[in-house]
Image (cartoon, rainbow, N blue to C red; front, side):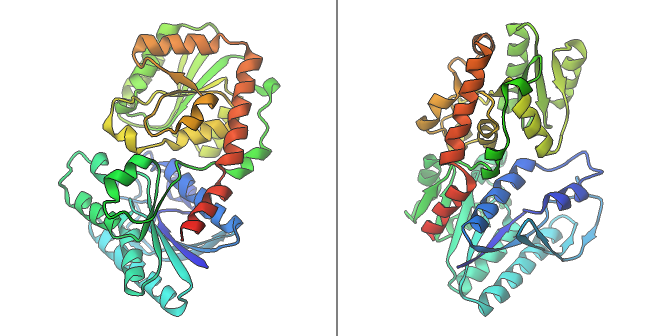
Amino acid sequence: MKIIYASCLCSKEKFADLFKDSDKMPGQQVQKYHRLIVEGLIENNIDVQVVTVLPITRMNCKRIYLKREQEVNNEIKYYYLPILNIPVLKNIISLINSFWYVFIKCFRNRNYCVIGDVLNISACAGALCAAKILKIRNIGIVTDIPSLLSKNKNSLSVKISTQLISSFDSYVFLTENMNGLVNKKGKPYLVIEGQVDINMRDFENEFNGKHDKKICIYAGGLQKIYGIGILVDAFLLANVENAELHLYGNGDFEDELKEICRKHTSIRYFGVMPNDYIVSEEIKATLLINPRPTSEEYTKYSFPSKNMEYMASGTSVLSTKLLGMPEEYYPYVFLIEDESVEGLAKALRNVLSMDPAKLHENGLRAKEFVIKEKNNVIQASKILRLF
């Protein structure tokens, strides 16, 4: 079996080069999610060809035209489709190029299967059309529900995405609730809430390697809807001695956060940093936090990849009881039962007052669990069985 993987995935070097001068860098978690799946497939001895529509827009990249390129990086074969970076035209041209590349590839070798990131309409729609015409098996990776992401549920992009999702032969979902919402025809599906890099087993989280201060970290989108304001207020209310809250990312809370940092030295904002750097800081931290409110409808259909990354670091995790988080995770994370400012402040005080050695041991247990049960090689093998 050979696989064509249609998405926005590019090598770390390519990503860094594209956005080295941009203050609007697209989300690195999307890149990491798909890279881990592809690396997992390769570790299962599968030949993978990544077909990529690079994640550039006029907002994050000044270049108007990018020629097609091929790259082999860490055993991943990338084919970057040519891009004319002009709104609408970019999507149409990328879709056509994706179609022809996949069509020719699969016409010459019918042993290919197609995996598509349904949120990348251009790459995925072109690849799926080619697969349908040639009767090639295909799987859609559904990491979010388009109608829940968009403020306008009746927009053209939402309608196209919804139709695209319904056209796949089978699916990989993040949560069981996704299946009930999307898979109306009862097609074969698989629930994989995420995966961790199997190579994290080689990164030691040592008690003696921790920061002297009790460093708490949040890394991800700084949107108000994700509870960042509540987290900051709760941390200040908790007033834990010798503790700091470090935040990474960008979003609509960014300006307000910078103002808070000027007033409170215990809150520090580091902006957007490379994922490898953030992981190294997570390993040295005392506690990793995800305050995402469970009252929002979308939480039934999501499992934040940051929780997987947090757990793989070996540092203890404090998280809300996300509706999309299976109960098997509960013994390995500290749960926020009361999501108010006062409730979160209490949870922070309770966890940070624990014996440091026991807190560290809890983080190592979580790491052992995800490395053993949720690594990207095992998760990729499940996708292969679905095929």
